Structure formats: C-alpha cells, structure tokens
Length: 367
Image 1 (cartoon, rainbow, N blue to C red):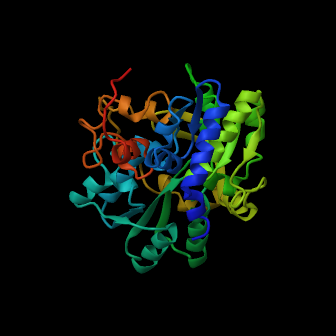
Image 2 (image 1 turned 90 degrees about the horizontal axis):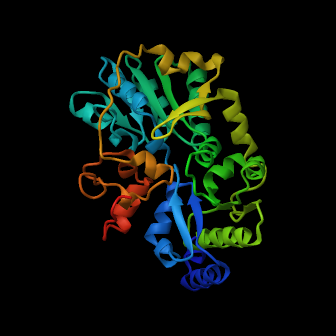
C-alpha cells in the first residue's frame, strides 16, 4: 500500500519522535493549519508524545468551521423558498447558523440535498429545470477549482436555474491575521499539503520574510507530520526562518498552474467574513463580473436577519490557536458531535471533533 503504510511506519515514527526530543532545547509553539493534520496529531498520539518539547496548537484548518453565520442563515432562508434546492457537502448542512442549520431547515420542510462534488449540483439543476439550484460552495483553495468547473459547465449547458453561494476562503490571509493577533504565540507553521498542492509553496516566502516564522509544508500521515515538526524544530533551534517542503510527492514550488488558471478565470480575491475571526482582507473569493448571473447572493434577495446568540462555545478561540478544544467550557459538556454548539465540533475536520473522538478524557479547566 504505497504512500500509506510507509508513512504510518511505527519504527520510522519512533525515530522521528526521538530526534525531535533530542533537538528541542525548549518547548516550541507550532500551529498546524489543516484540520486533517489536527486529526492525525491527536489520533496517533503525536501531541501527547511530544508534549514536553512541542506545544502543538491548531489553526483555522476547516473551511466549514469558518463559514460565517450570516451565509449559513442566508442558505437556510433559500432552502425554505418555494421551488429552490440548496445543495452542499454533508458537513456543511450540520453547522448551526444563528437560528438553524440546513439540517434543521430540512426538518421544517426546507429543500436541502447533500452532494459529493459541485458538478453533482449542476446535474441536479439539469434534471430539475423547474427549480432553482443553489450550490453552497465551501472550501479552501483545494475545492475552489471544482466549483469553478461546475460554473463553467453550467454556462456551457446554458442553465438558468443554477447558481452558487460562494464561501471559498484563502489560507494565507488567515495565517497573516493570526500572526497579527494580540497575544499570538505561534513560532512556526505546519502548512497544509493539499492547499499547497494547488497554490505551491512560493507564496509563503514573503510571509516568512515579513513575520520571521518558519513554514514547513507537510502531509497528513504520522511520518509526514513528525518530519515536518522535526524540520520546524531544527530551523527554530538554528534561528532559521524559511519555507521548507516536506510533501514533495504532492507539492512543488509553483503548485498546480492549471488549477490556479481556472480559479483566476472564475474568481477574484475578495475580503471575506470568517467565523470566529471577523473580516479578513483578501480572505476569500468572489465571482468575476462575467459570471455574476451565477452568483446566488445577487440572484436572490437576502431577506434574513442574523441574530447574535450568547454561547459558551469558544470556537473562534479554538480556531485561532488561543485555546485548545478541551479548554473550552462547553467541550464535552453542552457541546458534543451529537449536539454541537460550534462548528469545530460539527465538522469531521474540526479540532473539537478530533479531541472528542480521539482524546476525550480528562477535560482541562478553561484558562
């Protein structure tokens, strides 16, 4: 099983763990950017094994988790309109808005369908010409090309009943925001390999130069992650700030130029509201003017009002690395995967879901 068994090799992992322990002269603070990395760090006990040498904190690595409450409320309202179907990925329909999630809207008669790709939503539109189909487009740079392809396909088919509610977000502006937050503790980043497979890693070079933090591109298996952590520790110990790619089997400096071309053809970089962060400059994409007729935000009137809801959930602090999931007062008490209060507990890539699933014992007190 090439590219899986060798990256879960116990002997190789133990050697890397010992090397990290030997190299670290103090406890360094590293942030993993992707929820998939968070899950592997917790699932395989890496965080516990390195607890005395590396403080692993978790970033906003789940696009479902950072989708704004306002957009979810809008999608819920669309699903309740006559002859309108809202399509999105499975995780997305469970994330709560200010009143309801899409799943709750479906129980009240809303028309919501789970799809596995944006093109599935185009097929639904082609088969249901009497209905308006809105694809709630969520994801990082990894899924933005697929949504762009769906829009181009809908245009080619001349579909007038297909539109997209764009919620795609960009990772690098969020990392910049975290570095500028008061009390930020991040000393190095584990960059998400799948995002870098699209964007390339050259984009991090100005970031590293500006903020003086090492960035190491890693994959998602234990040996991938341990290799990335080791490289971060080596650079920190040596006072080196640079970008290093430890995911060479999928990532190159320039990235996937075909995917970048299709992103640039359909989208423009725009400011984006991130749940738990506020508005991030350049934090997302909007459709270019020539594709405005596929923009659900322009096709439909936004007649829903988001209400502020008091909650014990500190999901925003979790996603910005200010606390760990078990330091949230709601974790495992009022907030569980069956009854989530915040998006990080809903999504399969959420940090709270990772801790609840793989490390649920011994709840920590909030700081």
